[in-house]
Image (cartoon, rainbow, N blue to C red; front, side, top):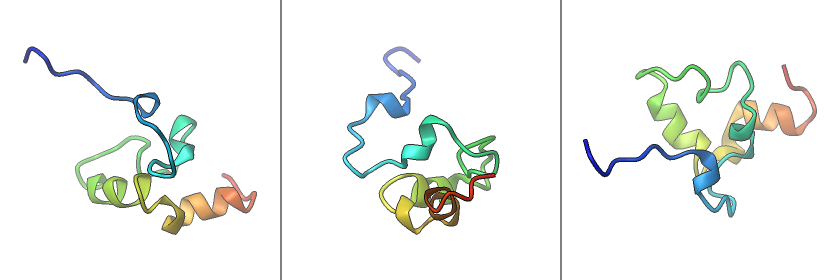
Length: 65
């Protein structure tokens, strides 16, 4: 399909709208090895509401995997 380009996290102005962990995702991140079953979690937690994500909170507290 002509005119369709793939977006990466670098294409967006983060401005607290995209999880900063997406630049180096944890192995258990919803974004990592994404499947159709994970899409609702990615939409919710990797975008605007990433601060509510258990994975984000764990990494922020220094308890990465």
